Image (cartoon, rainbow, N blue to C red; front, side, top):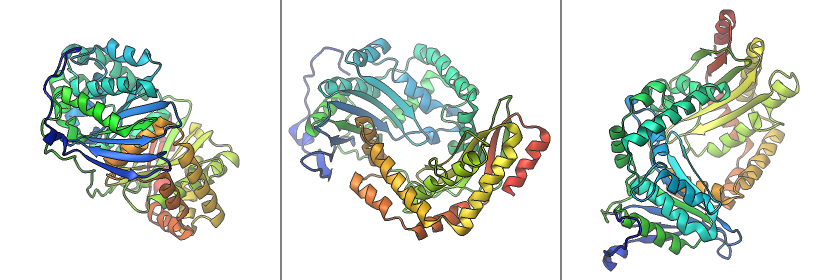
Length: 459
């Protein structure tokens, strides 16, 4: 790695540079919304979406690693590493990293999921070269020293404690465990107190070297950007770090596989002295590559995606049994989840769950009405567009699409897919998904008799 401020004298040959491959994946109107992709020698992919009308740009790097890539003893390593990449590189201290972005009024953050990790910075378009340099430096030049690991351990343990203090959040981790059991998808992204305390700098460093190879990374940038300039700046940053050593390396393919979730009718109860009981009732859903995901999105919206949804109307509006009630889907490469969440007083848990179960059964048997489906299609189409109104959302869309699907879909094509969903397709998905025996996760101060009755809901 070249030290800060020194000149790079060695340059790749023109022959090596010639193997970079650039494609236009989505052709925008007048250049607006154009998505281009360049695959560099070394397997690094760079995807951009151009919006000349804005004055901001969001730059991100997506890593093909999440908590499902961890062994039991490494649980939490992906998230731990996410923290550590902000601590120190060969060129910058933790203060240098944060101060560089703060000094231009930008924002920088990262997130870890079960199948990927993302690091990003949002800045003025004129400050994009700085953001590229800082984020690329973090991804390629982090040192992972013992001192930083020890300091950050305390912050991560506090983050775990904060999550455990929020049962409305914690119940979703419990539901993942209920559905997947003690495997990588069922374990918490943050890890546990025991696994985090057991992780060492050496183990995290090996994890970093294994999973942050350029072939596992996707660079995504959206806003008032020039694709060719972004590619040149990214390439220079990675070459400066010596990260593009193998010109013949190819990008890793999106995840695939065939996982069958066999959890049906399981109940997990975590006793806590809380004012509310927090519940998730659900069943296996669809993988994110399943062609039925568009119909599933419509079904989910009609069931629990807004104030006019079935569950909101039945549980909150008509009976006032809960303040928060909604449904959601989670799609992974080879499987998925569908869940219904509600928070209510402990004495009303059984009533709330019985109403939710009855509504799921009704929709599985009788389907939704044409009016409900039409309203849900409109809601999904509108929320899809409104959710892509800033450069950060656009960066997320193109980065995740490249990493998880290996392809890009224009907004118009997405809207067409949603609009093409038929009532029969929604009803078919409802029969398949909602007709299964559900499982249940509950956090709250339930008494023994109340807990015993919970099994009746999933019977």
